[in-house]
Length: 163
Ligand code: SF4
Ligand code: SF4
Image (tube, rainbow, N blue to C red; front, side, top):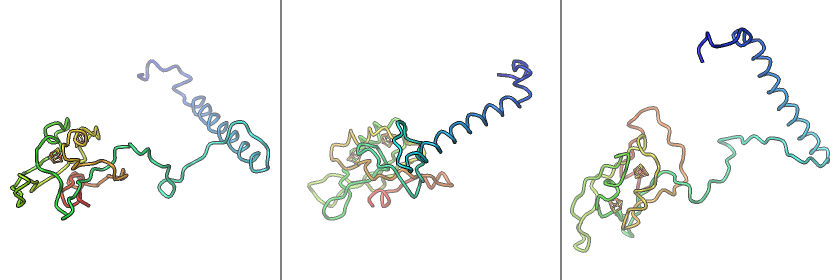
């Protein structure tokens, strides 16, 4: 909406500001009276709004929430990944980068030398987890705070993903 299409009343803002304050005050007094009534032992139909003091206080996450990836390990600590490249291929964000190398174990053909995920590009679709034939990658760490001051900080390498 441009300035010309606003009515004079809206362009002065005074009425709009007063309306905003009235809504805020209405919610404040409604919540305050509900909490006060409940603390005095009265039955209140609708509970007052409760503020979650994040990050000290958190709501439990749903068990199937897709959170930061992790690479699964074998008993000897090596990655379970066999560098089949299926996750890299299926990733719609093209944010997985794998470089394969030969595995010393003759029963396993390959393993990753490099396994990077750029979480700055990841869309958390979970396709990489679904497609993996080895259950080598999961998104169940429960870690959702991934912010970084740099783009490089969003690039997760194999040692981080294995821990
Ligand atoms: S969750 Fe989706 S976007 Fe993220 S790395 Fe896996 S396949 Fe790619
Ligand atoms: S799909 Fe699984 S086994 Fe294949 S490269 Fe990805 S993590 Fe490794």
